[in-house]
Amino acid sequence: MTAATAAGRTIDIPDLINNNKIGSFQIGMLILCGLCVIMDGFDVQAMGYVAPAIIADWNVSKANLGPVFGAGLFGMLVGSLVFSITADKFGRRPVLIGSTIFFSLCMLVTPLASTIEQLQLIRFITGLGLGAVMPNAMALAGEYSPLRKKVTLMMLVSCGFTLGAVLGGLLSAALIPAFGWKSVFYVGGVVPLVIGVAMFFLLPESMQFLVLKQRSLDKVALWLKRIDPSVTITADTHYVVHEKEHKGAPVLQLFKGGRARMTILLWVMNFMNLLNLYFLSNWLPTIAKDAGLSTANAVLAGTALQVGGTIGTLVMGQLIDRSSFRRILLPCFLVAAVAIALIGRPDVSLAFLFITIFVAGFCVVGGQPAVNALAASYYPTTLRSTGIGWSLGVGRIGSIVGPVLGGELIRMNWPNSTIFLVVAIPAVVSAVMVMSMRGEAATGKK
Image (cartoon, rainbow, N blue to C red):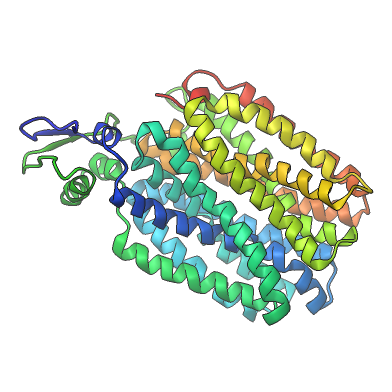
């Protein structure tokens, strides 16, 4: 039964969601968010997969692509910071739909680039749209999920990013030899355009957000009936969300009400883990090819990282719902440090290399959705997109540093063993951040 009173005058929205099964309406919403995030992951990682082909086609050095990687990630940084605040003011739905259509059009323009400078500019502009996707998809998924499955469902949606990266690797390995590197961007543009149009007609807005803003309450009533057809709603029904509107600058609110400590921990954790994630995602195929692997195996090495991340996301979501963020993420980041250091060992078998890359992906790539879910679980509704977006935005600084640092270390001819040993250090710092969490933040339970 629902949390509505017999007279239908008061409806506790979180309780109604918690006390009902996950129905087709919520599943449809989660699928739309997941598809959007899949293409986000596909398009973000596309540059890493086509890099070897562009190097050969344009006859440029691999180090020259470092700024291109960095430009796209800098665009994502700006998109995360700006559009997460916009979403907490105007809603998740319009920002998510607009950003999806925007980055799809940018992907279709990318093959027109003929120089590194043009490619750099286009990737920055594309990143603006890409950076807005994850914070809003995660926030919306969490706000339609019952507490008992909240982390699992948010991480399933977030898993779309790594799944998209895996599909990007598999499709790139097939498309580039047959149709050239430009075909990857055509696919990465058309599909999200279709998804964006579908979201326009089918995607709901956050009910908690609308109640707090006192907007479109007729739509809240419609969506509540989709979740529980037996609920009674009248003209004088009052909706309860157990939260209050936060006035003032949203970013400053992240440091008020006892949230400053956790905000800083999340920012550092995101910075360190995204440094690792984007170094590995962008440079692993190129480094692997230089180490003697064929082009196909080099692309598959990058794909193994994302496969590990996808499986890690699926496993960790359920473990966290049954246990806590701290108990799962602490060993996760410690194992990540060891795995990253082992990737750079010389003269290892191909099987050992792929296993090590898989484990690193499980912990680093799979751990990032857990960090996103931690932020979504910690911040209240009116700060949720801002909290996730700014955590990711600060993390994007690390995602820029990682590829650019990798390019500089390669330019200085550092051996792979030393490069990967250095890159293992941020995973240790992430583990220290997890150890520093306490109370509700460490468990995710409220």
